[in-house]
Amino acid sequence: MELNTLKPAPGSKHVRKRVARGIGSGTGKTGGRGHKGQRARSGGFHKVGFEGGQMPLQRRLPKRGFNSPTREDGAEVLLSDLERVKAEKIDLAVLKEAGVVPGSAKRAKVIVSGKLTRKVTLTGVAVSKGARAAIEAAGGSTDAPIPQPKPKREPKVVPAPQPQADAKPGKGKAGAEKRAGDAKETSESKGERGAKDKGEGKDKREAKETRPEPHGKKGGKA
Image (cartoon, rainbow, N blue to C red; front, side, top):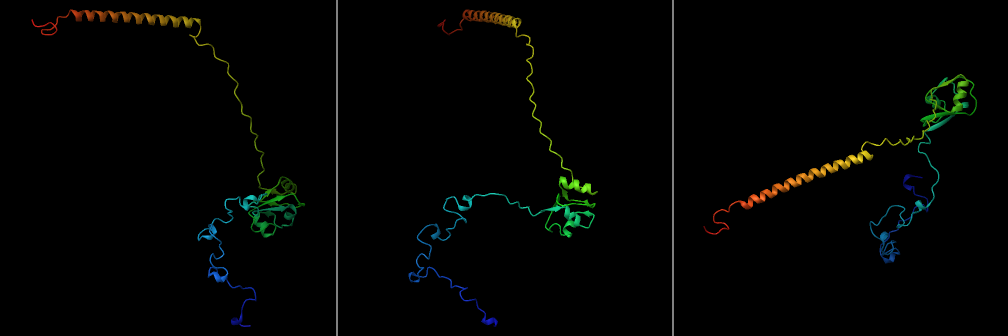
C-alpha cells in the first residue's frame, strides 16, 4: 500500500447531485425546491425550528426539572474520607491532593457518613450540623460559621384610634351668638357707609345742575 493508491472504502463516498441542470436530468426546472413559496426563493430562510407560526415542537414539549450550571463546583466529603486523609490540617487543596474531591471543585462540605476517630482541623470547608458535632467530639475544630436562624418578622403594629379632642372654642351656643352679633355689626356698618355714599352722590348731582352753562352752549346766542 502506498500513498498514491489510498482511496475511500467502496460506497462511503457518493457523487454530489447537480440539481437544476435541465429537465432531462430528473432534478431540473425547480431543482427540488417545489413551486413558489418562501423555501423556493433565494434568501427565504427563517429561524431554525420555525413552523410557519404554529407552536413549534420545542415549545410544545413539556419541560421538567432543573440542571444547575454550578452543580459540578461543589463536592461532598464523608467523615470516613477525613479519616483516610493523613494531614491534620485539612483544606480544599489537601482534599484535592488526596483525591477526595475532584480537581474542578470550588467548594466542599463535610456530611455525616462513616466515623471519625482522630483530631482534624478544617479550614475553608463547610460542615453540616451533624458533622460539626462529630468533629468536635473527636477533638477537632472547624472555622465554618454556625448558621444563625433567620429572625421572625414581627407583625405590623397598627396604632389605636385616638379619642377626639375637646370641642374648640367658638363652636357652641356662645360661639353662634358671637358670630351672629359680628354679622349684625358688619351689616350696620355697611348700611351706614352706603347711606353716606348715597348722600354725597346726591349733593354732587345738585351742584352740577345749579352750575351756570358756559356761553354759546345749549343756551342760544346772547
